[in-house]
Image (tube, rainbow, N blue to C red):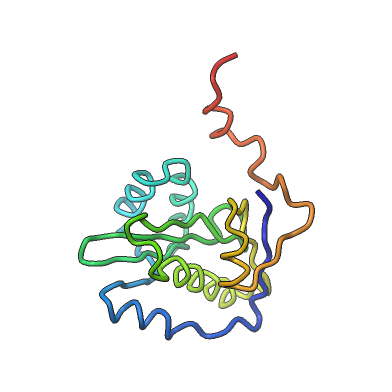
Amino acid sequence: MPDMLVRLYDFPDQRAANAALAGVGITCRRAESYERSAVTEFVKAHWPRWTDEALAAYSHVPPRAFVATTEAGIVGFACFDATRPAFFGPTGVDEAWRGRGIGRVLLWQCLEALAAAGYAYAIIGGVHGRESFYEEAAGAIVIPGSDPGIYRNNANDLAARPPA
């Protein structure tokens, strides 16, 4: 699972993609502090191993997270500066809502927030076979020698192993 690098200092404006989603009833926006329980419950229900990182995104005001919502509720999320400074992720879109551009817009919103905070580059940590998505969506490149990255020897992996 390599890490990837994204150049932020000339990242293109992505407002049109967000407006297109809004036109079909999908809102992508920064998460609010008062939504912490709802967002972390969504993450826990779909990707339980990412709950701690999603909670870390709420250690800042405003939160370092974006959400996608519909009339049905939360359908996606993305975090930044949660695992490490300038890191994007974790992120996920409910399987029933994939293929509509939601993940791409959430990614772009996080990258724009990192650029606005003064970062020149963002790191997408521990990419799980999604290199081509990040290459196309954000011009990301694989960082040589980044596998394994910071996620090696993590307690989640160790806890998931059967006892010896």
